[in-house]
Image 1 (spheres, one colour):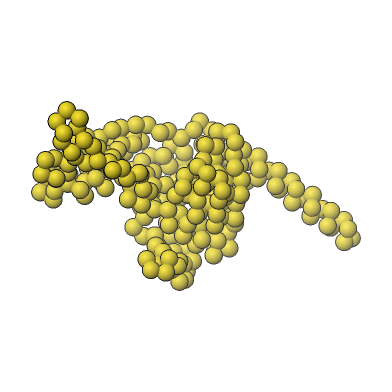
Image 2 (cartoon, one colour; image 1 turned 180 degrees about the vertical axis):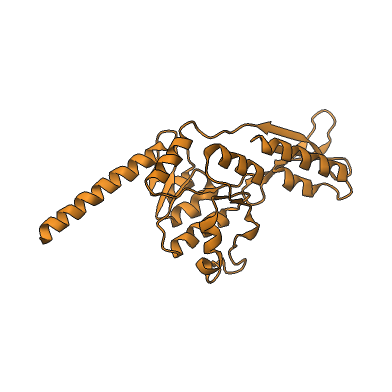
Amino acid sequence: DYVPFDPIVKRTEGTVRDKKTGEVFKTSKGAPHVLLKLLPATDTLTHEAVERDVKQLGEKGIRCLAVAKTNPLGEWELLGLVTFLDPPRPDTHSTICSARAFGVAVKMITGDHLLIARETARVLELGEVIHDASGLPLLDPVTKMKPPHLARDYGGLCLRADGFAQVYPEHKYLIVECLREMGYKIGMTGDGVNDAPALKRADVGIAVQGATDAARAAASIVLTQPGLSTIIDGILIARRIFVRIRNFITYRIS
């Protein structure tokens, strides 16, 4: 049996049979804080060691995944952490600076750990106000409707923040919806299935190069080349078109 990665559960799981011994056990890979919840509550040493390592790695911008398996008693045991680097593209910093120069506020919304998000924000000079998802709204579990008075209750939080970390797909959707309710025009970039609802709800959804089919279908614009600098070109071209249309209308009326 195999359970693919779920952006809400934040882990994947599979059942493995050892061909030599015939032993059957489960394996899982995912976010460290999620896999720690699978371990026995009495295993405090492992909890403390993993939390310490994740914090130290996160402060350096190093991402990590945890790997675990079940023992013969069916209890989960942590095997270790897999570390990797996923730095921003070289043109991302200049793209953000250009967007701000043209009056576009840039916010980061990520499922990464809070420490990773803060380090990324530092590198990109996005700002220091990075929150986790604990203060964000959720959809109603039964009706799947957004909370009433979304902009009134959460508008200040969404507007003041430079970014959010450890979010779920519905958080991304509701942040976009909240800012739209406040009267802002929202552009959203993304590449995964979990980005699709927010991409569709944004005024301009932008699927980056290599995005999934779901993200492409939900987006208004699909980038075919790596990087985000094309967005700045789009902003400039759109503003030129707007000015020409305005000038033409003014000319015709006068």
